[in-house]
Amino acid sequence: MPFEYGYGTMKFEASPFINRAAKMPPVWGHTGSTGVFLYYAEGLDLYMAGTIDQTEDKVAPIMLMIKVMLLFLAR
Image (tube, rainbow, N blue to C red; front, side, top):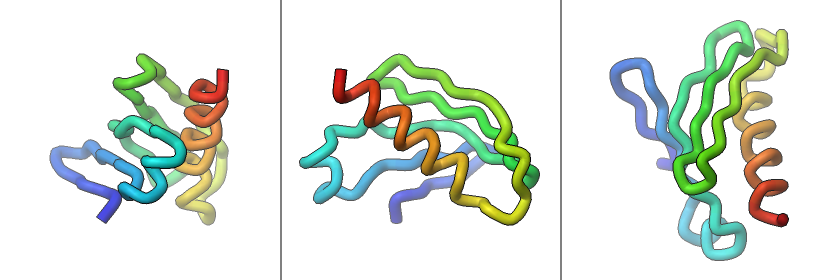
């Protein structure tokens, strides 16, 4: 599984296949039920916090963090 969860914190790590291409570091954080999120990518020293004000789209904060990480990796 790409997700591990415990003590209110998630760890997301891309699959080895995706990680070979993108070199994405693991992400720690949490997404709330109302779209509030806080993530940290240790390998990029990147913190991201905010809200997307969505209760139906549970994946949107994670996809946003992945897009931001890819921008950081591309520079």
